[in-house]
Image (tube, rainbow, N blue to C red; front, top):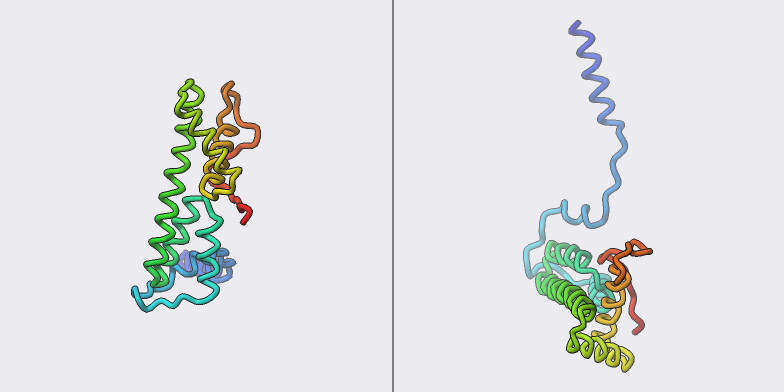
Length: 164
């Protein structure tokens, strides 16, 4: 009987050794390393490009927060703070878009004027107004007036690249 358990234990150990390693993301690989002390991290050209792209084009707060965690872990706290500020701004803009749409639906004239002003500013080329207009349009698609479910299954986590 002990030989049986010894064989099972050996097979279990071998199975553990031959089990394929699960694929991990780049973020998981970075976070498994010990953190770099603040001030000792280096901003490489590749990191600078990624940081710039995130600040210019990303409007997903969750993605920005994950990127901020990675930059902070790499010893670049000032860049992480900039990403966190952008994430908070986008979060506030999303809730603002929701508020404007809901207030417009109740007949609030001030909200209608705000929505009209945002549209005019967006057509004039204001980048922040373009993002606000996009968020307002996406919220109206997500929550139609008639209460029917959205046709596209839209969520607030979405990729977008604004025209520069």
